[in-house]
Length: 256
Figure (cartoon, one colour):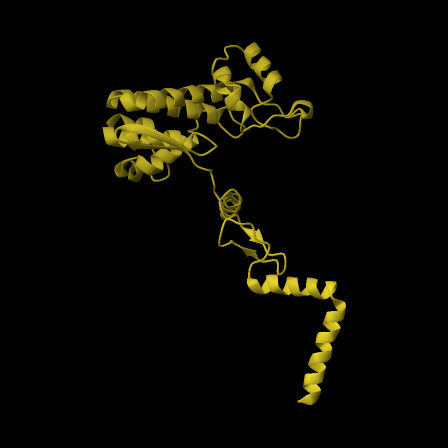
């Protein structure tokens, strides 16, 4: 946010190991020093709005819980997975409660989503107005269900589009853009095209968007558009020849 020392938010965190720096903060003084060096975690407008330190610490707590879940999930038995999942859900609840719209004792988004996706049917029918909190049904979940829940916690806990899936008894991670609207999907498709072997282009003649047939850059969508431009350029360079052609056409028409 300081224009005198800008940095790329998608590149610098990896080079500067910001996740390690942030996870190792211990005191409010550490936190203040981190923010002075790197800026606030969230941009708030107008400038007089402040973010309580408790929200920063709740964010750190959730990150640590996610790290523990990611590290231990592939090697944990059912009991270990239950403990790690519930620890992460509790951290997410706290993060939500410390936020601008959270209320004391209110469940976070992770608990709500997990309840919708994985809570047993009889618990949902018992009280249709409330989604069962994971602490109500995680203790009785099977190992296979716990693995899916663990992967879902990791998928839903990051804004940048982390994807986690079980393959061969291990958690595999990948990055996928977090697109939630058709407009976002169209934008993503455009940028993917621009970085591909055959980037989308706009015809210099008719203006329509088109995909070239090869990797070679093309200015025109078709032979017809290219030919029209070439003919206009030729006529501009050869005005006398253009008059001669018109004269020949007139003569042919008169003879006919």
